[in-house]
Length: 259
Length: 249
Image (cartoon, rainbow over all chains, first blue to last red; front, side, top):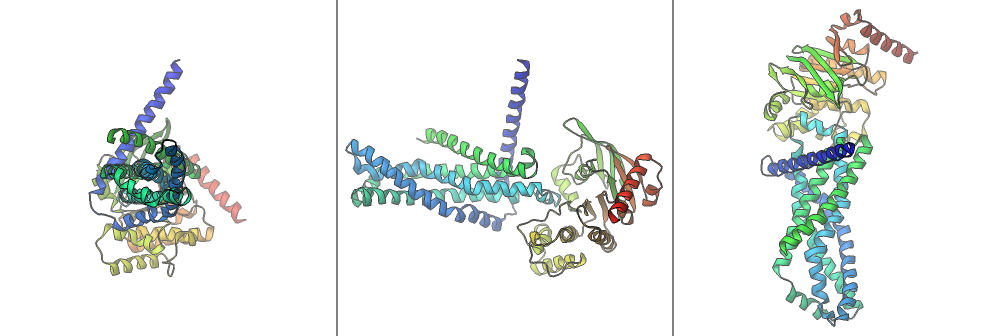
């Protein structure tokens, strides 16, 4: 019994310690966002890394999410004689929920993992130590541009995801299932308002911070996860898992607060 | 001047440094030798402020770097250059960008001036015409030279070398040692070299300190270390010599 308590205590302490360090990491990064010198070139590079390079996967998943949504919702709504509401149902689901969440999960898989691996390799090959010994704050180069890029790019990607998804739903609902084009779009105007779009934006911005923060932190502390290549691979997996779980937990929390 | 006083460090209860005492005078080249895993790199990481000791002091010109805040430590680090074991070049940058990086980040020099200084530093380490290559496109020996050029380019007072010749063949090893001697003459820095290249390092260093089981067991000129009667020092220097003879034969 005593042994079990000791193990639990040790685990609890390590969780609290990690959480504390993660919060300090984020706080320092957020402080550095507003303290010069600003690294605009790095920011542009990371916007391209998070945004432009994720575009294909966002377009593909967005289109198919909209199509699946339309096909499922159409048959459900028809049972209640409400198939005319397909447009708003697709749009609301995407804008309030699925667009921000799924696009964030996609970017986590594509960009978050490679960001952790890149920073992790910099850690084990002592490139981060080089910055430290040059009296430069590594967070300014590694974390700040990614967090700012996340804040800028995630809402934009979610918006693209929403638009493509709505058109995916249009293809299925109007072209395949025979709903009229006017019904699909006009009902959307009646049911959607600015608060829905705002909710999507809030979510995306917070997901941008979560993904870039967790990915950078895990890469930065790769040496604590394990040794060498194994450490990098473990850190990458942990970053993806933790980011994905946090996205869903935060989504629920934010959803229940903002609803 | 750098003074290490009673430096102690443990990891998970295992003592790695057990009271290190060593003084490094300005402009001298000191080699810290010892067996692999003996704490040499841990000692170096303390000297450059990456690790904090459990006990003891490291005085850089009288300032204890184990006690100062980040800003003060950064001010001291501005006078340091470090050549890491694996070169630690930024692999997403070209050779030129790597060497110019400290100038771009730490100085307000113009583009032309930075270009001139970076190319001159590369020339000083015997590299010309590889500015546009990436670290993955050059050999291990060249990487060490680039790392030295990057350390030299801001004109530091002290350069730390963490096993600068590990994994290099004997010819390249000698050329890197020659380069350290030549650049030391030209740039007049204090050099601290972590190494286990015996006896080659004796030709480079003004002073040699041997680290064994967490303490400095001998320190003196290369000649004094060669003649040292401490059995540990004798065994280490002779076994390294034997290994070298074996590898050459």
